[in-house]
Image 1 (cartoon, rainbow, N blue to C red):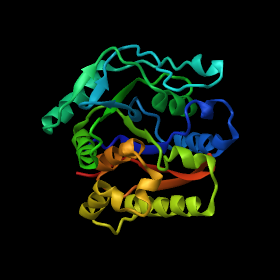
Image 2: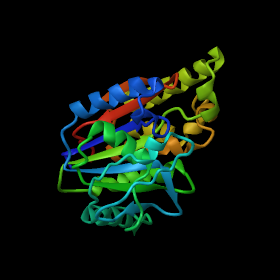
Image 3: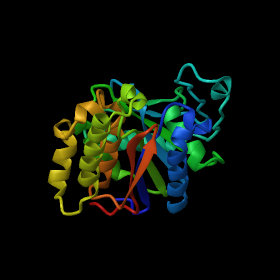
Image 4: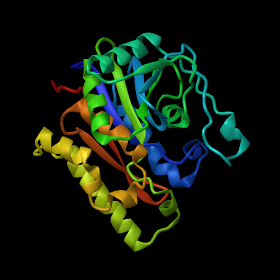
Length: 270
């Protein structure tokens, strides 16, 4: 295992709103800034975004990827955001090889740019855009066990100091962001408690932790919090890669809902 590997799962908020001064994202923006300050500055970033699904895992391989403004109905300035970070084709190849060596399919895409699940949080965390980045897709079948295995395969990454980011949302029921009923909030909090225990409780065996994350639908109010699981699965990739309890959990309020960040620093799993 690469001892210079840091891993974080972040809840990335709604579209470009974190960059537009939206008050419902102030806690998240502050939390991302705090997190970036605690991490060792990476030499490269690998980001798994909830906003990219392919038939098989796919990694960006371009040298200068553009941005994909994959959101609708926002002010004009939302479509002029820039984040001109370089790509890193050699790292993309290493990711592809790691997955294939583990018996998982993976292909490269030299044309695809970076979606807002990547450039919005990175513009907050590393505004200088000087760190090379690659983005890794989800698999379109959205199988939790498969995404845990993707993370386990990435343990083979070696060399430079890497930061692996799972960019999703620990609560992602779009309709419920616009309500504040006590019942909805209770369901939100119950699922967050389950997720925090699952990821942070060092007394859990790794077999039990993996079982819980693979069968996350059995958690309290799981399908209320995630009618579709694409925003949770970057966490499975991160947890599979880490192979242990997380070092730090941050609870943040986003659009009136409790959401979470999870961090594993200097991973030591074998």
